[in-house]
Amino acid sequence: MALRPGLIFPPMNPPCPFCELSVERILATDGPCLAFRDGFPVSDGHTLVIPRRHVASFRELTPDEWAAALRLAKKLAADLQAADPTITGFNFGANDGLDAGQSVFHCHLHLIPRRSGDHPAPRGGIRGVIPGKAHY
Image (cartoon, rainbow, N blue to C red; front, top):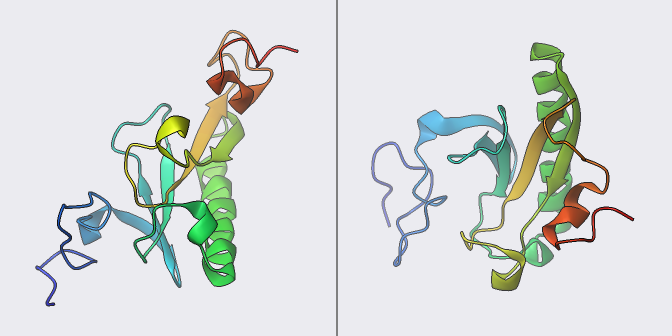
């Protein structure tokens, strides 16, 4: 199937927004993975890292895809922090499955820059996805 101009993947039915991603949105690539800014960021610089291959879960990633995703996340975190010294930490992870809050079923890893004071009680980090579990 031929690619439409400006797309990096062939169209899917139903369409996957990450497979319909325009080339202009890509920030960085590493072999089987690429990165782009989240369309609905929770903080300035919120970035997604995805495999080029359409799979729904991080559990389906190959060792090469995992390695590339981690290299991209490390590089992008360093670049973000170098460009913005107010970034003092990151949350990095995936929503894997409907009950975990996944809304786009193309595996994607969130790299979310954090800044001092961006949340009144950041202790516990991602544990906060379950109410009452962040503070222990």
